[in-house]
Each structure stands twice: as structure tokens, then as C-alpha cells.
Length: 227
Ligand code: A5P
Image (cartoon, rainbow, N blue to C red; front, side):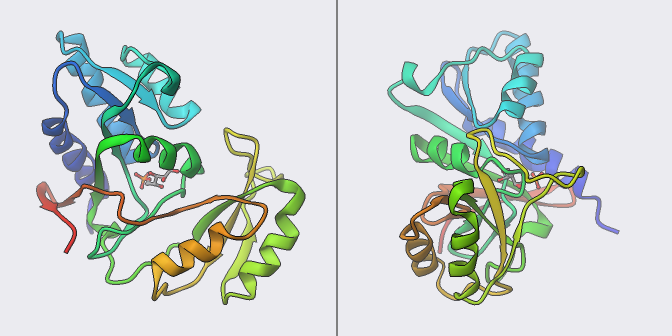
């Protein structure tokens, strides 16, 4: 059985090589990014100087626990490097993100970053995106309408719920539709179609955004660049 925790940890550790002293660093969300935040915190305790821009309330809390100084997006002109996980990535390094519900802030931070380093265990590498249900962040007022429009594109659409059964609410107070396409043949055209639906705030397709992916297989980490 593959130990994905070892892989997440290995990929996160390898990403430290892309962070320089003095950098403004995007702090991703999810279990792999959490390893990165912990490792970065250890370096900060040893004297490394960085300022972090968290991609979610959860990442913010963890970064504070780890002693990483934080700044808001309004306080910096640009982010030097953003390190974040992914739910899937394909050979072009297109991603599905948002399994943890933070896709909106994640995309904003990635788009404001000079380098976007994705850290992933081997389960995230796919030939084509779409097995993982694509998260789409929506305004609650429009969610039924948007769900019907995305269903008409061929997806099975489910409103994300909490364990208690109420709708999951994002940091920006929106809801998430998890859209199972099974196979997304043209990620860029689907991304454009979804963005054009009124009521869609953002979707979890990250196209041409990743600078590189660090994918771990066992404890071996491979650096992938887009084909
Ligand atoms: C959070 O919203 C997501 O985009 C995560 O980055 C993604 O779900 C990967 O999470 P794990 O590292 O926990 O698999």
C-alpha cells in the first residue's frame, strides 16, 4: 500500500528549495500544503525571514501557530512564490483544486505570484482531469440555477455539505458545487464556459498557472514542468 503521507511530506520538503530568504510566500491549503507550512515555520524559528500570505483561514491559523509572520495581499506588490497542493494535475500541469474548499483565495494568491509551486503525492497525477469532482464556488442565491446549467454540460452536480448536513460555506461565504465530469477533454474551454455562468464566483480549474509540480513517489520527488 502506498503511504501518501510520506509522499506529501517529501514533496512539501522539496518545495523549500524554491523559497528564498526575504520572500513573500503564498501559503496553500490542504494536507500537503500543511506540511510545507510546518517545515517553513521550522526554518523561520531558525532565523529564515519570510512573510506569508495565507490562502484560507485554516492556513492562516496554522501559519500563526508555526510562527510565520503574515501579510495581507494589500500590503505587498507581488508574491515571490506560492506553494500549494492539488487534487489532480495533468501532463500540461492543468490542475483541479478546491477539494479543501479554498479554491477562490488559492487562485487569487497563485495569480499574484511570480512562481507557483504545486506539491503533490503520486495519486494526484492523471492522464486527464475529471475523476476528482471539480469544485465550483457559487453565490448561494444562484446555486440551483448554476447547478442545472452545469448538469446540462454533462456533470453530476452535488452541493457540498458539512458532516452536520448543512451547506459547506467558504471563507468568502459562498457555497460549493462538486461537479463530476469523469473526464474533462478540454479543460480551458470548460474553464471559460464555467466562468461565463452568472452566479459562478470561481472554479477549481487552474490552467497555465503552475510553474512546476513536485510530485513524490515514495520518498523520491520529481520536478515536472509543463509539456
Ligand atoms: C484546497 O482547497 C485544495 O485546493 C487543496 O490544495 C487540495 O485539495 C489538495 O489537498 P491535499 O494536499 O490535502 O490533498
